[in-house]
Structure formats: C-alpha cells, structure tokens
Length: 84
Image (cartoon, rainbow, N blue to C red; front, side, top):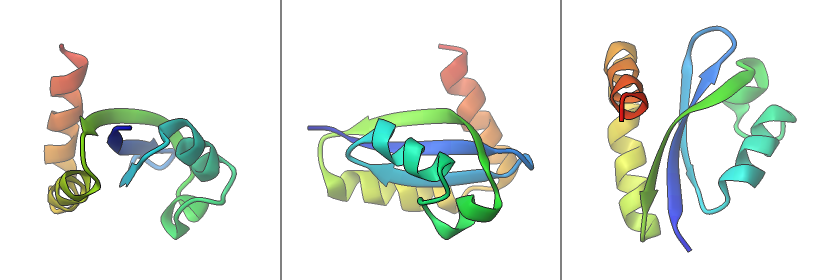
C-alpha cells in the first residue's frame, strides 16, 4: 500500500504538509478538526498537492524536505503538478 505526501491549502492561504497511508481518512480528520493541531486553527480548504511513495521512510523524508520550502516554493511545486 502506498504512502502519500500531501499539501493542504488552508482557508487563510497557508499550507499544511503531511504524510499518510490513507489520504481520504486523513483529509477527513483534518476537515473535522481531528487532524494536526495546525489544521484545527487553520482550516483546510482542499488538497493542493499529492506525491506517492512505496515506503514510509521515503514519504517521511519527502515530507521533511517540503516542510523546509518557503511558501513561494510550495506554490511552485503545486503549480508544477497542476500543469501536468
């Protein structure tokens, strides 16, 4: 079963990055205020970006790398995927 790295676009224009094995369940948790502390106060609007990985370890590494990006760099990453 694949692991997903995802970026949520929040209502205030900020981004939340995470990883999960079950993307549908995890996004539902975020939407219901039962996900991360961040998304309890920065309500998610939509899933803006997704990457698939075969292992938890590779997903975690990618999540950490994305979290280090600036807001502008994350926007570029999202734009590059939506242009495919």
